[in-house]
View: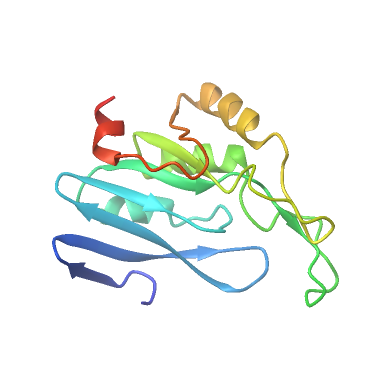
Length: 158
């Protein structure tokens, strides 16, 4: 799919969203809608100016934003010179993106899973940084255990 392309599959509406990471590779995030709710799921992406457009194009309220928070810095051999800037957003950017999306809550992703120094180095305190930024910006955060499944409808009603 291409950015902003939408498809309907068995009662689900799925929209490919533009995204950008710090390695320059094409990226997509996803708006998934069904029933009365929607979720945004982003993989490795930086903060960008499409959040407002996503909120405007959603056909339902965005209940949850699954956003990366690890602020990884990369030093890949095929990307020279290495950039000191993060290749993916961090906690503060994810919290602000959640607000711009007008999402009810943030579900932090891409934290605490792995670190492959010196090639891929994540913020070791990402979840603490999420909690601090969320408190500052009045954003609700849902943090299921790593690898745990949870019911979005149930989490929304909690």
